[in-house]
Image (tube, rainbow, N blue to C red; front, side, top):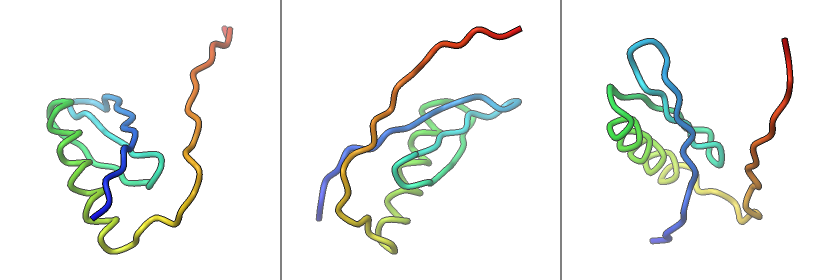
Length: 69
């Protein structure tokens, strides 16, 4: 069994936290950030058991600032 590190992007929508794994495309939610991450881990693991990832280079995630009105 392979071990790999993934990214979780979390944001709040109304009364739930939504967690997304950009490397795989899985999304899940929870009432807390911890629950959302736990649910995302489970969803991602189940997805990868059915559809393993091809060997690919890691994605680069950056942040940037913009000015808008």
